[in-house]
Length: 304
Ligand code: MG
Image 1 (cartoon, rainbow, N blue to C red):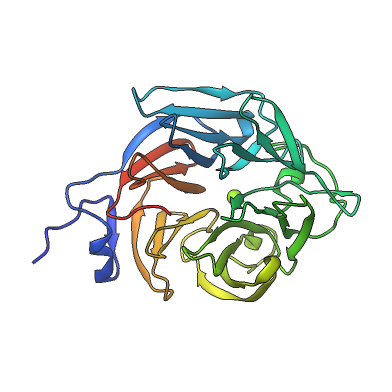
Image 2 (image 1 turned 30 degrees about the horizontal axis):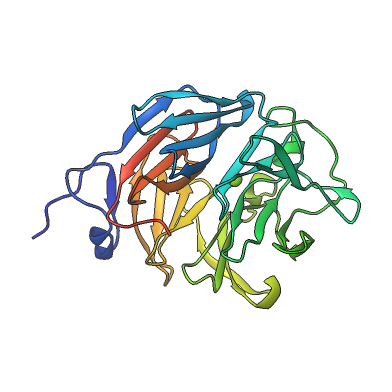
């Protein structure tokens, strides 16, 4: 006999009961964004940053007192964020059409802006591998209109996934068979890379799924079969926990899939979710960007 979970959760597979605890509710930490995206947790400072793309600002939520402030504005319409191995903020900039790094002294370094002499479209989401390489997606959302960036034609004419080498800083194409590549995350042992395709925004019956690639030496990818298809809205961002479960943003919340692909359950959010990340001292608190608001929920697992 199980104690029922609160209405913040939907159990689809009994395995989800080991990942969600009774008596816990989703909390809304902030509201007032136009399109919240790109959360990243800074463990040393005990704060979270996230993007409010149309308002051209990056926000900051402070764990010590729950306060919210503007971290950066203007923000070059930053979208996805992550923190690198040295604790520096990595940003995908629609406005800058680049991936940048905020150094420890606060200065900004552009890590990738062109490929073969052509400007990137609008980097969307980013992840750092344990070898220091930086992997990012480059769909067209930030150049499709002036709402989330600056309208412009694509110089590349494709929407690809790229890798920045940790040693040489060389940028290489790792996947080009996407309509609109979006969120990406490695499995715990980094043998797999999951990449979302949100192509349904641009094609009737277009992709709205996440694919699974095998990661080879020097960043070569193989496979790429569809891992899961989103049943409500679109996947966008995702994170993987220490057990290898995928936590994917969707139209009705965050969907949790086991490494075998089964949908285990959901964290229900009353707005469309764009992205999420794990944080807190134990990395067992999930922060969720849901359209106008920032939410959080404690889980019985940890982000890797
Ligand atoms: Mg995204």
